[in-house]
Amino acid sequence: MKVQGFLSTRTGGVVTIQPGQTIREAAGLMFQHNIGAVVVLDDQGRIVGILSERDIVRKAVTHDRVFDMAVRDVMTADVVTAVPQDDLMSVAHTMTERRFRHLPIVDEQNNLIGIISIGDVLKAQRDQYRGEIDTLEAQIMAAGT
Ligand code: AMP
Image 1 (tube, rainbow, N blue to C red):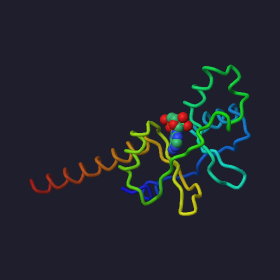
Image 2 (tube, helix red, strand yellow):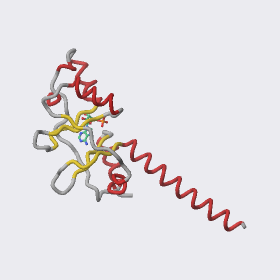
Image 3 (cartoon, rainbow, N blue to C red):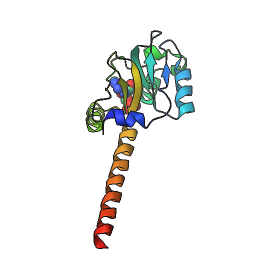
Image 4 (tube, helix red, strand yellow):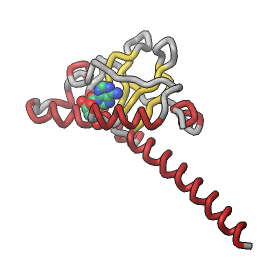
């Protein structure tokens, strides 16, 4: 399956935040949407970072007032992205190799059009295997009648 196919099964947009907002606001969004990362966009809508719960925990080790800090001071600025034509397996490979769990999806103009997590990839693979098993079971049953 391609990233495009996965995106088409998805409802709702990507949860984003601006660099000047606080970590408290970011954590509130993550809690509200039950997600582990938000994409950081500047006021032109360009991707300038990604902030995951791991960034917040890391920063909290050395900064007691992490919740009052600006997103820009905690986020990862060098964001790795994927495109809709990418294969889900290659996306999973990137996340495993780079040791992160989120990959924003961009179009040709680098505009944010989605996000995929390692959990999404595992679920898509499980659904695909389940479908293949159902088909094989149906074929075996039909052959036996
Ligand atoms: P995660 O496993 O996604 O919660 O993130 C682990 C670390 O990788 C954090 O420092 C994130 O900011 C960073 N990170 C997550 N996704 C990406 C990405 N697509 N590109 C670059 N860094 C990322």
